[in-house]
Image (tube, rainbow, N blue to C red; front, side):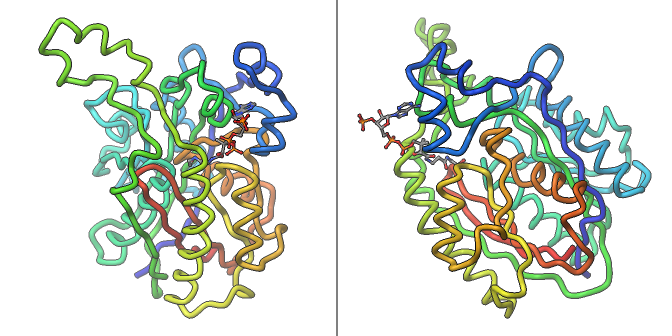
Length: 327
Ligand code: UT7
């Protein structure tokens, strides 16, 4: 068995924050952000918008696009690092809201590689016949985890959600290629908002408000890691599946930074036109970036039956990986 993506959906908040607005509260400029990252604006959740509400909206759109009933879904995986609650998991909250009573639900936490790993996990389950129809969602409310005084991070990230419906069908599945390197985890961190170790003394309450409980990043280290590992893992996944670069229609990379995408294209000696981007409008939405881009491409008619796509994610952990998707 293999899995086929038969529907996509996305949701981004209406609240758009452009670079000029960011430059009003940290020392930066529209020119610097655009030149160094490609980002022009990002969406920031407001009002009732949460990781769960955005996941539900994206999930509903993917279900509509797939033309299936909610009752057919037997697996929901939500990839997130910014869940509303520790318990219950986001996937169970999505199940409740959608009424997907037949589904087994769990969250997956692997930062910007999370959606790719959710896709691989569902594919493996489908391949061995455990589940048949999966709803996979990447949803992030990163604005909650941002240090809005740190110009090294707050300029980069945004909120949003993307989703796909993956259905079992006859055929051979493509093997993914994935890696992790926990020893380099310090490059991109966020302490739990509930650091229990500090709650046993009087500093506990202060620790909960600590700016350390925000995303911290060694931007250059992550940049260098991505430039080396992403082309490498794409090469591996092509080789593993006996595919040539010419067989690939589009490379759908995690939307971290325009310069990373351009450098990967250059190292692979592939034209930049095969690397669609949308970080200019949404920033880096971590595990939501790949399914949001996939949905945009699907709805704009850029994907055709039989197209082979490479999805590639990379980020905190460190984690990275690539998968081949046949449309
Ligand atoms: O989702 C996956 C995880 N994340 C990533 O993939 C992020 C990967 N890294 C990056 O995208 C980039 O490293 C950043 C966009 C975060 C930073 O860009 P950079 O080109 O690596 O900048 P830098 O940290 O090397 O800083 C260069 C200069 C420094 O000034 P000096 O020391 O040369 O005078 C910084 O202080 O730019 C300064 N700088 C800024 N200036 C204006 C750093 N951030 C800003 C800023 N505005 N926002």
